[in-house]
Image (tube, rainbow, N blue to C red; front, side):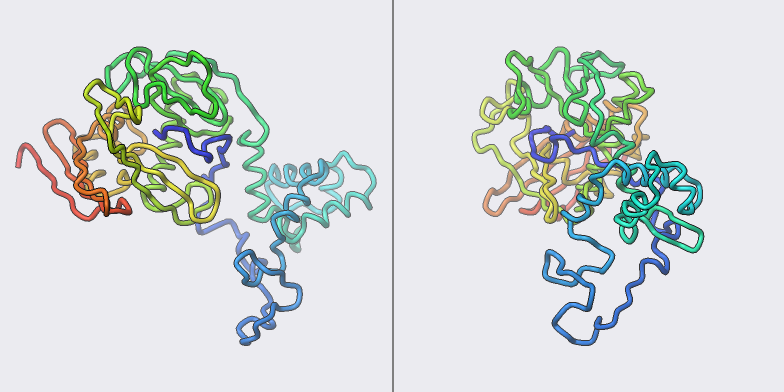
Length: 374
């Protein structure tokens, strides 16, 4: 789990891409091609109808600037069109779309529809259908990420703390589920999201799991925790593999080292963490950033996954969340150098272990597997 202290962890919860694989649904067919007049001609200017992209390159004619895209969505009729097309099983004609709209003036309705066509909506021979950006908007709305605020006060669930085995408690807050141990100091003690810390918040903070509000619908508190853990773990696997879970751009990993670390009493009084090394994750494109234990940088490594699966631990959808958390958060660390940074982390399952040496970018440069039966 992440510590939840980053800018990105404040109200994120982007909609997922479940069921929307690379093979697509026909949205990237002929409609996605660009009539390239000047493209490839060696000219330094933009082709007619093109606008400049943020990086100075040419923006496709059908791609609006961000402010134009958001302006196009700032109308109830247009949002209604997107939701109607999202609920439809096939393209809808103009008259079918208009009949399902609350706007009776067909001229005004056509004006609003025209603002969506080209980027959010595709016009085909069979009628109107959502383009991929339009699908993303509808998915985000239905996930509740931009509109809903579910209520889940601090509740005890059917799972145990990975450190002391005591019952854990969860609550919903600010776009995610926050997890606390009911007895011990947890992972971060009272180092609880300083930007939003309440007076008198007890120790025991174990971390935060980002999940859209829809993840709580129809689920008990224990079921919501499992859904949030799986959702969040998929994000961590993406980050470990160098991929931003929000925009898919590359991320960078930076070691965060407590130079005066002393965790003999459980948590270090200087950094309020159990381990001297944490990892900061920063997207190179969007505003996403987060932080967490050093394992955040290596959970996608094949050797660590092998160690887990060899012991019947599913690192994606485990039967026991506590079992995987113990592997990811109960590890030994040795900081070999701080400039340049080099450290060795040793993970264990039962009597078997895996030592992983990482460099200044937290890339794994060496592994050493030790098994009790070998």
